[in-house]
Length: 171
Image 1 (tube, helix red, strand yellow):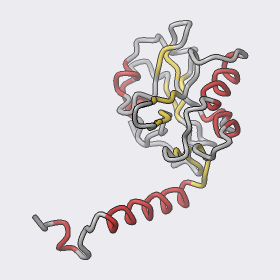
Image 2 (image 1 turned 180 degrees about the vertical axis):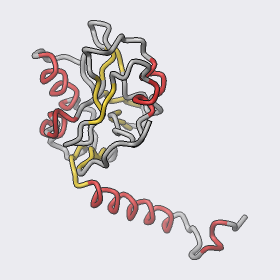
Image 3 (image 1 turned 180 degrees about the horizontal axis):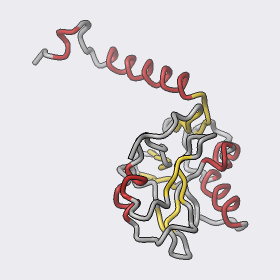
């Protein structure tokens, strides 16, 4: 299956800012079901309380999307406006092939037994609005990737990785 349009904005997760307050989880669940809870949220936060590490798990709307490629009934599509990968429940048979294909574990099963995933709330993610710690941001894709690349380069420099092409072949 061919890759879809590149999204203009992407969901960015800053794990250093996540406090495990789960406001994002509650907001998502409420927007999708009208109820506060965790069961039907499209975002989850995994916590390692002994180290204080918290990792929000969200759909990255891959391009190409493994979940879309794995769907045997063509129920997964990419929104032309937002670039979000979403499930068309009129065609979905809940076989879970998409769930197994997702390399990030971002597809889950809701309380009704349906597979669910983030659809970016049609371009206005509730999780981002609920995150007062700025751990979740919905940013211009090019700027976000540039920022992430710069942060990665800083970690390489701090780790003492050598400069130049020889760094890639140094033992």
